[in-house]
Image (cartoon, rainbow over all chains, first blue to last red; front, side, top):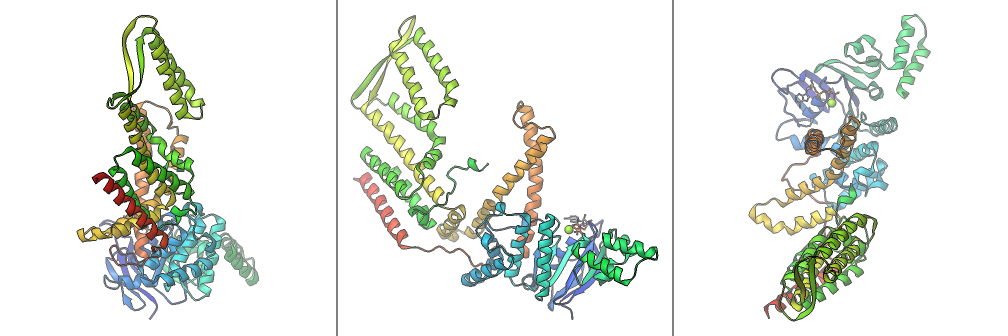
Length: 268
Length: 320
Ligand SMILES: Nc1ncnc2c1ncn2[C@@H]1O[C@H](COP(=O)(O)OP(=O)(O)OP(=O)(O)O)[C@@H](O)[C@H]1O
Ligand SMILES: [Mg+2]
């Protein structure tokens, strides 16, 4: 059984529209999965359901064998950490140190261990020198890294990034993507939620959402290379891939060129 | 916007900075009580001396403390003048005949105008005010040309003078102690200390930890919200809203144009924040460990003993 199993999940904020419709997907341990979809396709709704911030209308969610319910909520939140979109609205502590400590305090970690973990994980995201700084003194990218340290320090099995790069400048964004890559290489399970394809190219697998339903679930290469599918999902192709399709339609190019363009899109 | 905050924390390494926030809060309560218990001039003078010593020892800039006092300068002057003018007990120390004549009234009006126009160019506003007051009194005492409406005398009595200084010193001591505490303690530490000190109220089913959490989050978001207000003001200004000028009706429109976006953004923020907190396993009212713990040190014991002794002494002096 996979680490996260979502079966036939449906949700509606009100009676008229359904935000999620019969969504099923699974995530294995150590995998990097992107959930890709246009604005309003239900991505954030899915992430909120996953940690019990919203209650599903129907369907089930299993994490590490625990079926999500009132009783298992605490267990599931210990296993999944979220980094949200807005760097300012998730910074709870008055300083970086306090913010990383917040989750640990909630888990009732003893003080000595808390101090060790704060040091360890702030170093990991290169924020050790900033421990006494206040959020106003940090850039958006730095705040997001603090949020990552806060989640890492709680030692969750999965980190979910809900459009965590969308409010950052290009430099902050590529730095955050590097961090994700490294965490995944070290064995962490990563879920990125995004409408930006550049954030999804590095993942092992992409789940494509459209209007609250799963449109496709395949390897990143298969999905990003499928022009019709992406158009159907109201998403634009990455430029190198667009080029690849144009060349293919004209009967130009060979496998080496195709491979080269794919690598180019990975670096974009 | 930061300079609005009076008595804002300033980093330092003096005695007060090193003291536990609980000590400072308890000390503040007991010292304020002592200041209200004291009723002799000499004792108040002692208290003022002690505060000055503490100010020097704690290495807090006296200028900052004075700045903290500026908002109550008017109150200080008013009570001072009131006491001198209307308290007529004790020996007569000094009297000054005042002529309310046409010439002296004209001179007073001229002096007040001159003072009002020039005071913004003078650095020592308090001294300049005293100079102006002295000029007014001189004019009233000496100019008796023209039609004299009435005459009177300004009489300064011993008790009036004494109680004027007594009340002024009391206000100065109160404000100085409070300012020194807030200037030497981080707001977060103050909050932490408050949480500990309010613990006994748990018996009354007051959830002190939740109150402390609410204060902590407010402290965290005040700068962010001020920043936001600034941004909105700039955005509205670029659309032609002028926040500096305008009559009352326009002022109301301006404030509404600031408040409405502020409210909407704040609600969005608090919603996000609540989600982020919950996702990080926060459960209101559930037990938590703490990163910051407060430890009583020797300095704190010494300080508390001294403060308590001072309190008992002033209680004794009052009762004797
Ligand atoms: N609090 C809410 N109340 C009512 N409807 C909502 C609420 N939040 C989202 N919706 C609706 O639910 C649908 C899915 O929203 P969701 O936020 O999950 O989309 P998303 O894929 O995260 O979009 P985005 O890329 O803009 O973040 C949208 O149609 C949205 O309008
Ligand atoms: Mg979203």
